[in-house]
Amino acid sequence: MPLELTPELLEQMRTIGLRIDRAGRLWHQDVEVTHPRLRRALLGWLDVRADGRDVVRLDDQRYAYVDVEDAHLRALSARWESDRVHLVLDDGADEELAYDTLAVGAGDALYCRVRGGRLRARLTTAAHDKVAERVVPDDDAPAGFALEAAGRRWPVNVVTAR
Image 1 (spheres, rainbow, N blue to C red):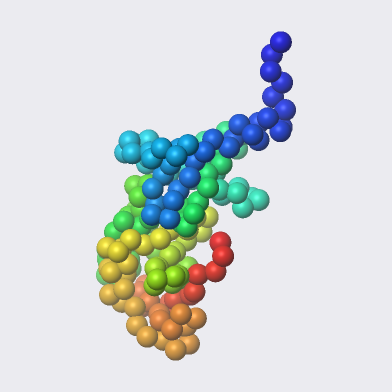
Image 2 (cartoon, rainbow, N blue to C red; image 1 turned 60 degrees about the vertical axis):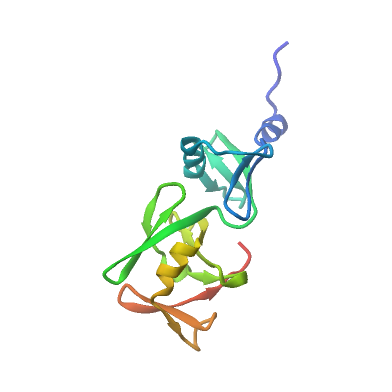
C-alpha cells in the first residue's frame, strides 16, 4: 500500500536538519556543509516564507526549513564605486548595499537587508571595515552614526528582532 502524503507528513519531511549558525556555517544534521558548490547552491536558495519561516526553496512546492541563528548570509567584502558601496555575499551575489537597512547590533556588528529586503546579511570584518570608511557621527541617527553614500547621509539603525 502506497504511503499517503498528507499535509502533516509533508510538513514533517520539510524539517531536514538544515541550520546556519552564528558564524555563518551551514550544517545538515549536525554535519557542516563544506562542499563549495553545494554550500553556494543552498545559500542561493535561501528565502523566507510569507509566514516568516526561513527556507531553502526550489519553487513554491519544493522547499525545506532552515534554522538561522543570526543572519541568512554574510557580506564577505565591500567595495566603493564612487559614492556607492557594493557587497559580495557568501552565496556569490554582488549587490549594492540597501543603505536604508544598515543597522548595528551587539558587539558593533553591522547588518543589512539583501535580496530586495527578504534576507538579513551580517558584514564580516573586511566588509565592515570598508563600509565604515564613510560612517560619521550623527546624533540624530538611531545608532548615533550615519553612512555617507549615494549622494546623501543614511542614518545607521539599531538591530531589532527580525
